[in-house]
Image: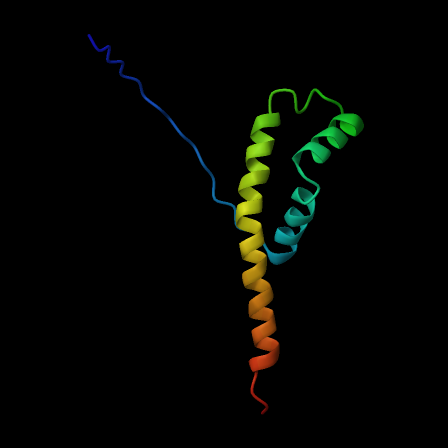
Length: 89
């Protein structure tokens, strides 16, 4: 016989709006890679802060990379087009 279990799942998320300079800073931060960042963080700032959050940090870095690179490409393309396509007055 199949066993049915009911349970509630609660989820939270946040929307973060960043300026271009902040987006580029995040790109630089996650560009080191998860392992390198985590190793340096632990060595310089201690292991206690990341003890329970390492998986969350890896997930956040992955999410940042998936959003930051396309955003920067869009910004760079817009800048390129604006500098080329502006008609002479």
